[in-house]
Length: 71
Image 1 (cartoon, rainbow, N blue to C red):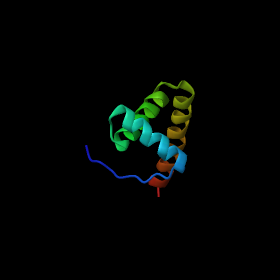
Image 2: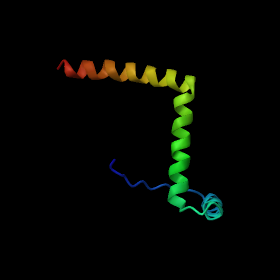
Image 3: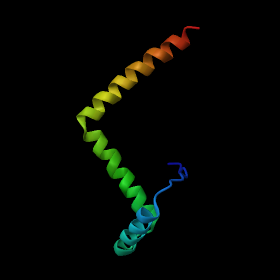
Image 4: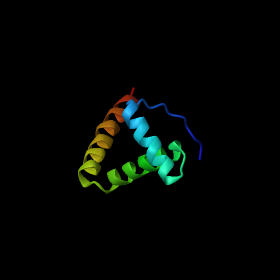
């Protein structure tokens, strides 16, 4: 899998807290961030309301893309 670099701005307080959590867990900050992102995505996958919004978005985009393809 290809990696992509992202830049995220957080408050100084969030950065300090994240660094402290990473130190206590003996993990790099980047790994803590990756774990948090993975947990967030997994939570969304299990969230039925989110999945309904996702399906609606897919349908809206499908309609737009089909319309564009008919040029």
